[in-house]
Length: 350
Image 1 (cartoon, rainbow, N blue to C red):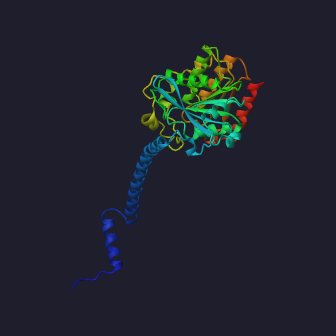
Image 2 (cartoon, one colour):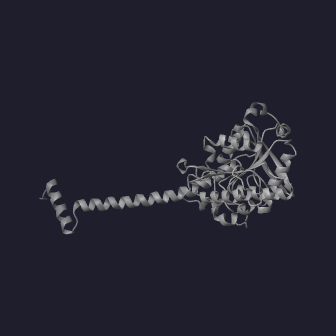
Image 3 (tube, helix red, strand yellow):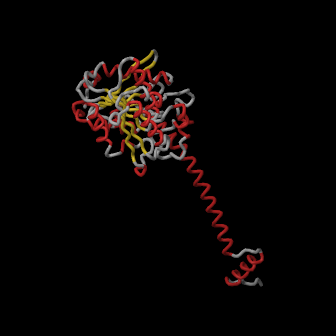
């Protein structure tokens, strides 16, 4: 007959084997648990790596799927799309958003109406975006909406090689596009002030274009630089921005390697040198927690511009507390930004 082993005997035998092997039951449980924790940790890290690559890739593909010729499809109901030809075989896309108080009047209007609206006396901003994506990026739309709400016209340009603009992006080409847009606006704006807003890479394009305008005997009425770097040669590896950088800011170089139209270009765009020649009223906007361009760059730009213009009134630096977590692209969310812009524009009129 087989001997029946009860539960207590099984427990005793198991304990005996564990003691013979030098391990207690509790030790075995801890060991098994630590193994599972390590497996889950590895799976979590792997998932994080996959997300850090796949999400920007999917968002990049999504942004490319937007029909940029139809801004109304993404809620811009007082914006029109147009195309300009600054060079042979080059066509650049531009959105023109009218002041918010004219949105009802703008419904159903054609390009001629929008062109004529530029002469209504309201200030006009040419917005120059950063490197990556196109004019439909959320933070770019955010700035356009803020400027429109304050009562200004906004023209958002996709440089050649960006968005649905044709051509090959180069430093000279980018500046040519902006110069062409500036002269196009001035031919229709009457006495309205025309300012430029450059963000990140756009700050270098703005300052370089401002110098080229001076060589033509012209100038912007005001310049705003947001998240500005000293020069592109120093910051080439930081031209990594994306509308959703907030999600993968700890992996900024993913954007650089995947979607950077200018990553193989030899850029200079020397904002530090340009500001030594410019006497145009200037406002610098920068977040303390900017993860792509350190706040120290804004401080140095301010020092250079202030020395060049020898004026505390014409050069302003606006610091945004790092606790607000605006990083590189989020300044448009600040509730105080409209008043900051309004005060700057009022200073131009005095």
